[in-house]
Amino acid sequence: MIRVVLPAHLRTLAQVNGEVTVAVDGPVTQRAVLDALEETYPVLRGTIRDHVTLKRRPFLRFFACEEDFSHEPPDAPLPDAVAAGNEPFLVVGAMAGG
Amino acid sequence: MSTVRVLVGTRKGAFVLTSDGKRERWDVSGPHFGGWEIYHLKGSPADPNRLYASQTSGWFGQIVQRSNDGGKTWETVNNKFVYDGVPGTHQWYDGTPHPWEFKRVWHFEPSLTDPDTVYAGVEDAAMFRTTDGGQTWNELPGLRGHGSGRFWAPGAGGLGLHTILLDPKNPQRMFIAISAAGAFRTDDGGATWTPINKGLRSEGIPNPTAEVGHCVHRIAMHRSRPGVLFMQKHWDVMRTDDAGDSWREVSGNLPTDFGFVIDVHTHEPETIYVVPIKSDSEHYPPDGKLRVYRSRAGGNEWEPLTNGLPQRDCYVNVLRDAMAVDSLDSCGVYFGTTGGQVYASADAGDHWSAIVENLPAVLSVEVQTLQ
Image 1 (tube, rainbow over the protein chains, first blue to last red):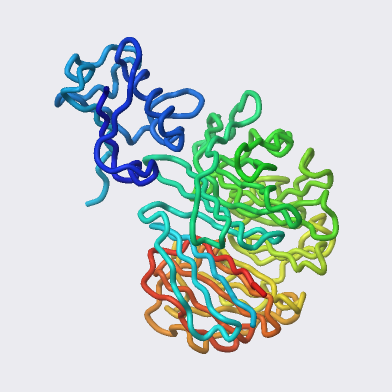
Image 2 (image 1 turned 135 degrees about the vertical axis):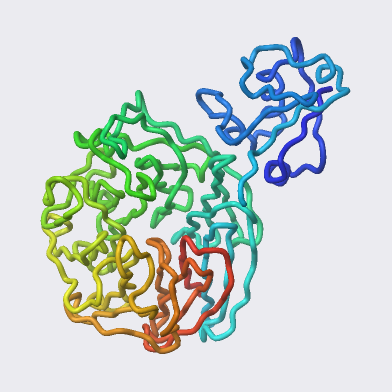
């Protein structure tokens, strides 16, 4: 199972606490993880990536294993530690404010 | 006894205020959707417990919430707003073509007869409709498809379709307004649209009397007389008696004719309300005095209403969707400020009091009168 950490507002929207887990068949990529996440929590459709283009929303980032994968191709494999469930895939909202 | 429910959208959540018909004591429920911008929430005239709310965020985009119990509980419905066909471009701030991009819902207008049918005014300006209670949204492409669409340009707040008025006497007729394109009317249920901006004059655009390009802030109608409309334009308060075919200025003796809100008394079609704001570069009341102005003559002759409103050191704004009226015998008038106050008058504006203070900046106010 893939572990996913969502920002607080999306946890509220999805009515979950803490990490969520999703099952991914085949290669573990950003696209596969987000597809599985949206399949499990349809309310998240459109909140992380655009409904039509599936591009990441501008003020969100994807982190894992202390690296930024936001600009990696969506079909590039995520680290083995994420695929193995040892490390979470983080959806992070950009910090704003003073 | 009647109940009044005030629906307040703010920068950081929604609030539902309720009172009995005396309108003296108010219960406050909220924040609902705390931390999110709630541009607008509105109830269905056909089923007052059916509410729709536009929940938005710069990070997470658009969410649409629906309540079937008057705002006690909510459920998300579809948030997919996709422009019809190839979206094309409109004009950007610098005059260059810019692709049409959905950003948020500014305004929901539920059908007068069917709680599952709702019109949505969105940014970038377009009109969508659901006929299944929000499960699917489809654009009415004839509006953006009007030949002028590629020349529409955003106002400072964005290219938002913010006003939707449904004609209670003619289901095929609707009026809408867009900042900064102007006002439009359909007479065929939204299939085709006509700009209705003749008589408007805006010094901030290259041709002050152009067919489109005017920054209309708000339009209001009395249900008994849907051919008469009142408009708060960027500058100027305007009136039409022929459903928008021609407008004339009725700013009269207002201290400034810049502002955002305008509304009509429930029982007196010639009694209208505005909140003058000093200027487009100073978005606060003149002289630090928060004054509602009322005309009982359909414009031109205005009186300040100040009883109970702050008359010194007040520098809030009242945004375009933040005024509403109830339909009790003694008409209640309500408005919200960017300072987080919601003011109400239970006697048509003669006396005011803050029914809630210290909310986040208020974006919208709607009122339901429940039996």
